[in-house]
Image (cartoon, rainbow, N blue to C red; front, side, top):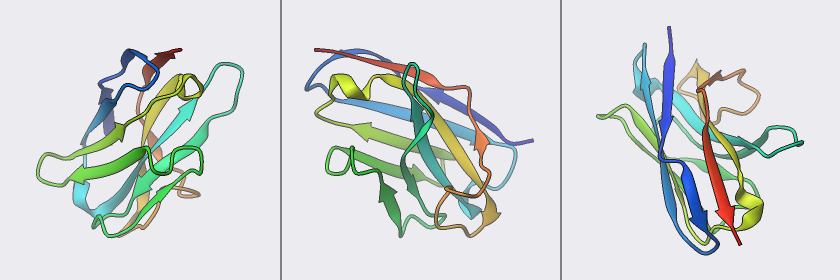
Length: 124
């Protein structure tokens, strides 16, 4: 049973930085791609960024490129989302996602496992 637990969300001001963490358990963490999605009020869940199983490849949504960074620690079984220069449009519930395909490069279209989400609110 794969379990994902996000932490690090909160209320910040525009321009601030925040780092989200996602601790994974239930299988060998280092074999799978990991990523982040978000869902703002009244909007569909959208892709934010992800990282391949071996950390060689990362992908980002256009809206966050240059501001957000996904990284992983395969010893601590944790994936991170470092967010800088936050904007009010970044306000959303952020979900950690874990790919199902071994040695995967991305979690997109991989029917990922989901965490419970953590709220990020950016005030302008």
